[in-house]
Length: 249
Image (cartoon, rainbow, N blue to C red; front, side, top):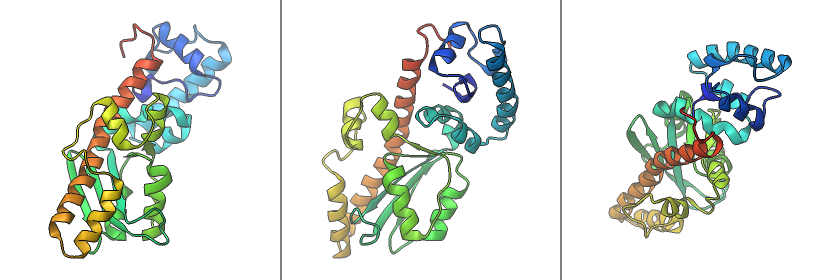
C-alpha cells in the first residue's frame, strides 16, 4: 500500500467508498475519474490529488501524516521506508524525572548506531539524528521513548511518527515487542533478555563490567533493527486486510 493508492484522507471518503473505488479498478490517483462517486466527492478527490501529488513529489511526509486518519498512517511507510529512522531507547526506569536514558539506537539506511550515556549520548547528537528523518518508527515510542527523550534532553521531536504498537493492535497482536516478535516469527540472538535485564546490565556496567555494556548495546540494537522487520510484516498484513482479494497494487 502506497500513499497514492489511498483515497481515505479526503473528506467524505471512508473505507466503504475507498473500497468501491478500488473494486472499480481505480487503485491509483492517476486512474481516478468521477464515475464511481457523486460530483461533490469527485471534486474533492480531484482537488486533493492535485495538491497531494505536489507534496508527494517533494517528499513531504508531514502533509500526509496530518492528512491521513491516525489509524491509517501506516500507509505512509511504503513511500518513506528507505529513509525512515527506526529507534529504541533503554532507561534505568520509567520516570524521566528520576531515571536516566542509558542507550539510544537508531537504524537508518541499513546502518545502526548506538549512542551511550556518558560517551556520545547528548542533545546535539540526538537532534541531528532526528531532525531530517521523513518518518520515525518505534514501538510504544509515542507514549514512552519520545516523551522520555524530550524531557531528558530538552528536545522537540516533531517528525511524522509511526508507532507500531497501534497497527499491531489492529491485527490483534498485543503485548510487548518481544511477545509480538515471537508470535509473528521474528527471531532474536538473545531471546532470554527483557527490559528488566537492560537495567541490570547498565548497573553492572557502572560497577565496571564492560561486557555488560556490550550485551546491553547488542540488545538495544536488536530491538531497533527488528522494528524494520516488524514494520514490513505489519504493513503487508494490513494491506492484505483492507484491499479487495483481486487487488494488484
